[in-house]
Length: 555
Image (cartoon, rainbow, N blue to C red; front, side, top):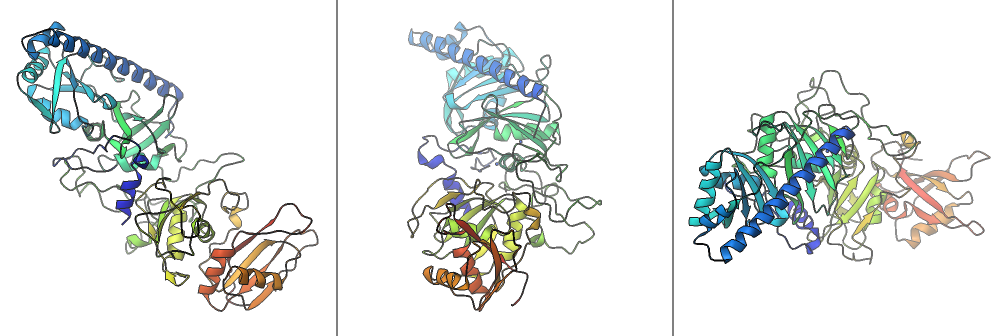
């Protein structure tokens, strides 16, 4: 259910004309796919190399125009005319289809000779292919002028490039040099690119150790793999492919540094060999919640892919190398082998909730419920699946808490099904109007009602749904009668018992407990009334009534 929706949403809203590219497999199947701090000097070097390679590509395009004009002037055949440009080991390939990735070029052209390097130019539908010798390149150009050569089921056209060698960031003297660190340039990045996204894209092909994202020359990232072989497979499989349909196209080169330096784990950098390397910003920002505190000393299991590749993919790691579990290591020590995978933390910061009441649930009410277990970033209802929404939370731990405490509860007579989504982020596409005329998408990342961002977030008590609600931040003049009237006005069950806590003389707000007939009634009241604003005459700012489940079982 979710996979269909995600695929549709990733397409950039349908306005972008290019179809999605796909990750190359032996069957040619389409596979959808999903960053860390490096030193500034390395980033600048990589960007400089990118500009060099782009200029090399432009030079090849100019050479193509020369050949095209010579053909129109009456040359005998394409192979003959192509020799107006001096032979070169580098061949300029034109007429590629949108779906081509590097592996398609290698598969179609390696019969002419050993290929040293490939540089994709996705938006021009062109590429540069460097052979190990001029003779190999001549065979390619001659054959392409004499008979059709197909790449990914589409005829391509060939001529010599004016360049004698493709510039790359790695060892300039060794044309076959490779590196286990790849430089990824994301072209047409319509959607956010995070460490989670790139890990989901790259890890199914090879074991990812570290990721760094930087945004000085567009959006680029460096991904460090466990071995050169893994990096080589990833470059073949992903170079020229789209992360999302019709956008976020990958251009991949070997990077200059052979190791990435990561100082924090967040959306722009991550060290997967140190999953508990947290970033602690001074004075502001959210911090990943560590449920069990410091990690046990006896280690963790291996990292695993988030995105399942087809079993026939020649780039997928074997089942012996990869276990189909989760990307993050379990928090529990290995000394508990009986622990099932369902009890481990999820691998995504997005939850999927289905079974929502079609007219009584909206984004704000989902926020009211989920914010008890972690920060809520975004909420989006899925247009193609009525009664289903995606909830992006602050981290995967928040999602795990929400799944643990909210899955199976009843809200407005409907049983909720809450699970971890395979999606790594909520994309605001296909926005529509809900039954109550509110928007199907809402961003809560800046709201002050998120309870896990402030200095007092440690006071939050994670509590399962209960029949007793704790209310706080109410106006000091709030009465039982006013609360009962509030329940009646919003058509939610009324409480049966009311208790006010003794407030300090200096307190400007009121808090207490509300007991309902059942847990279900308490859930409905919280879903509707949490964060309700109460205005008091003579006071400009309203009081935001806050509710949560109480540790008390009864009053």
